[in-house]
Amino acid sequence: MELLQTTHAAIALLLAGDEALWGIIWISVKVCFLALMLAAPPAVLMGFALGNYKFPGRRVLIVLIQTLLALPTVVIGLLLYMLLSRQGPFGGMHLLFTQEAMIVGQAVLAFPILAALTLSAVQGADRRAVETARTLGAGRLRETVTMLLEVRFAVMAAMISGFGRVISEIGCAMMVGGNIAGVTRNITTAIALETSKGEFVQGIALGIVLVLIALAINFGLALMQGRGEQR
Figure 1: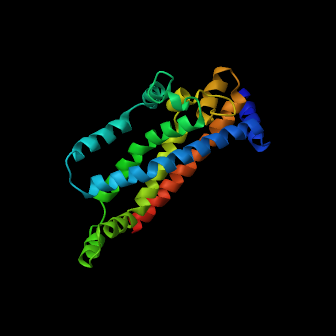
Figure 2: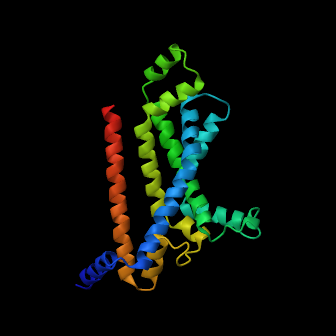
Figure 3: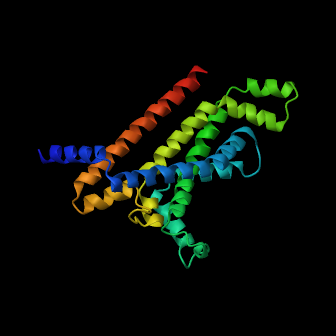
């Protein structure tokens, strides 16, 4: 009964438009979106290059990307913390415990997912479109654009997957963001804080939002994959 009452109170808190609660949600969405925009261009280009060209060091780069996929988020957060701390090489930029540090950290987390899924999409793509463009005299840039258009649904699916990874992680956000109220406190760090204090209403409310975001992400991912298969 207590759980039902707490859940009801959490839903009421969401519907009431609680400023602090929605501020946390806004910080999460904004930071994740900007991180994705930062990571997407270089990650997609790297995935395309790895899938389309043979060059020295290609296998090493693929192994590195696969290793980054398996690294716990708190380890990446620890590495960034050491780089951005006062004693670190980038300490003079004063980025630690800011949204900018969170954006950088989550961009690092999203990068290997975007690169790996783009690589997989390029390797499985129909090469006839590129070969046709080549026989018609298309240059290297036009070939690249043609291939990216062929795998655009897979790339969009990769971006949705990347967004899902960064918005649900807690380790890196806690390490480099510091969980500062109104500044760097996002959905996952707020859930951890509120439940540790025994304040379950806000934690459940934010958990509901995270579940809804996960459902939307998976629905969008299924939609993108379905369109890609139809093509």
